Image 1 (spheres, rainbow, N blue to C red):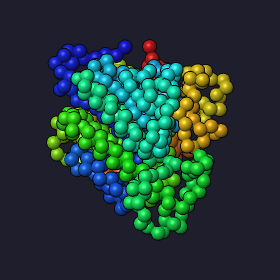
Image 2: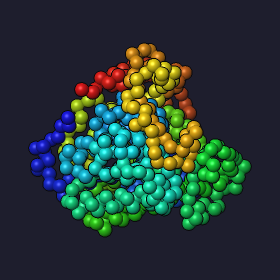
Image 3: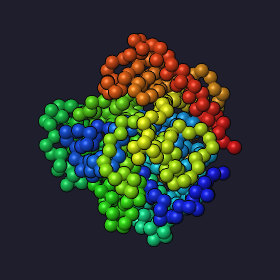
Image 4: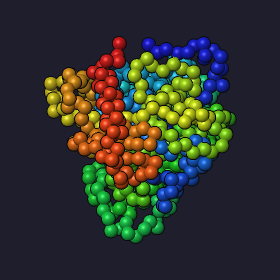
Length: 490
């Protein structure tokens, strides 16, 4: 099923092939780092990575919400191709993941933390092992302190400690195992932070005791840590906890980097950090130059931190303003490992030449929040892609999901395509311009190089360009809908 460049691999010894670590923050938007100028947040590790590595200033999540973006990382494809429309919509077992590809090439592959593209229990056809990983310690969704996780499909167990630190501790064990076995490795590390509800260690909370007093006069709605249900709290207290989570996550990434250094692995390990979507409204969207938030197609919803360290190839810090997206991860890693990409439509491109400073342009990037209302309206008539019992999650949440504290998933066979299937908020992003069409078919066009705040709509003054981009976007949507109808599966 998977095509590997065997001839290439025979010339690349295991110790010479790069290791890969893909790290992702949960709801961590572009503005929420020290290196991007946040006035309050303390992120010394990410700041150092931005100074020493490749800083991707125009890096995007493939979708303004979490499950879809994670599907894009695993497959190199837009999530709508496999019906991962929104949080709680699963991937499909027919998808080929980066773990499938690298494991066949001799890599040891592990997943740690938030999974959220299907249930992690043993019988699920979508758990990390079923999707190509050799080992995993994972949660169906997000998690807080003392998280409950499944180890390789086993019954959920509580792992005592701060969520990010627990996740990294398990990752380090896996890295040591790969090192001892003499294998290159892929570690996918998806934190539960800083997704709400928020909490923090006292030492981290104390760093944010002096947030501006004006935040006391605003309230935001989010989940209560005590009840698991919606509540309203003062913004200042909420931000203190959210920022504490981000700082703890940052520190945990530091533990990871230090361990690589002490193990002699850092030089030839590609460490790639990003967020899965923009900051949520529960953070109040304070101190950001970007428009919109999680769930929207404006920059505040899809633009996220993007950092790559690889000392063997990136000898000094560099800033890139080339557009890049989470779908680029699979083709990039395949390129660096000498592995052929799947023979099906991909939406990402390899950024391997960007790491050496040679890449100066890339094809447009398309985004799409598919309007799944038609699917949910006709759910009783549609055939589930997977037995619903296998889609039920088991690892506990603080937050109630309806009447329960676990996350379950869904995916359906797509009915015949109609014009209505082309709806939903969508975007085409080229080198300079961004076309935005909202769910009501309103059209906007922005020049992001001059207007990153998306305040000046150009679609009337540059109507020919807007029309050209609309046609390109429509053509891409047709390809996606063909995939959604299972056109890519044998």
